[in-house]
Image (cartoon, rainbow, N blue to C red; front, side):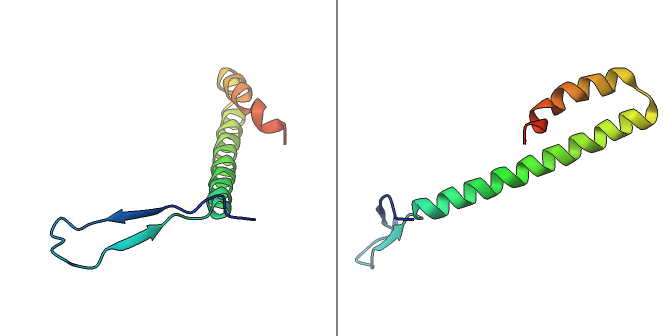
Length: 80
């Protein structure tokens, strides 16, 4: 994957006084996209597992109202 752009940001220390200036390069677009997709996938799996556990607890306790409420929240996860 090609880099979309590279931006250098020059930052001076408040006490510059002739010291060397350093440049910081941003991460490439590919790395940013891959990290965003990884975080999204991990969040999705965590939320789905948490909701699964809550539904199972509602079934075990026989709480029909809680089960119906959680079932509505679980619907988006069925479209895998």
